[in-house]
Length: 230
Image 1 (cartoon, rainbow, N blue to C red):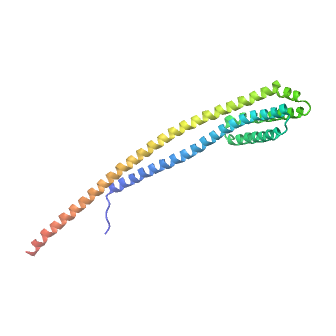
Image 2: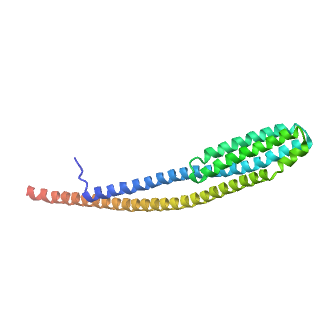
Image 3: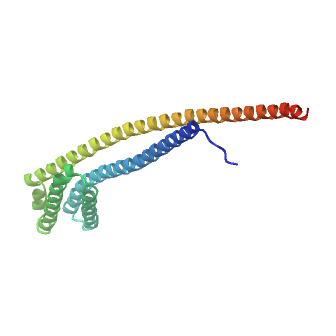
């Protein structure tokens, strides 16, 4: 025996499914957004860390070279070579991280040029030191080199400012998007809950009507049977 379901019950059921689906959709989108935003924030923080590393390694490059020149101890050359390798690797990693950021393209190209220039200046100072430590110190303290260091520091400061602003922007946008998603989820879930209650009410009402109809039919049948037997 087929049970006939009222149209209004079917309609409410469909609306409930849509509301539940909407809540699930916005939940998924919120998780996706949070994941994507988290990766961007992580990349930006890593970029800031590398910028700090380049700044520190540039200073260390000069300091280790000065140690070699002032002390004449070639053991410091190992530290110098290690620092130079780290600096080169940090700049390369920094370039890879910000390759999709147009605002940083010019900065990273200029930084590469000035870092290479700095390495050449310090290498030249070490070569001069083989003949005269005094001349090496003078060469290392030249105005051109100071200008180069200032340019590196200015580029790094500019890059850091861009990344910090980007970080703030992403965190704000992520907060706004998350807030909107949570609102949509709560609204969809609330609507679904109300529809479910309505659906239960309609089903209960339909069941009550059916039972009442069955009871009346049974009573009519009981009343009819004695009349026929007379």
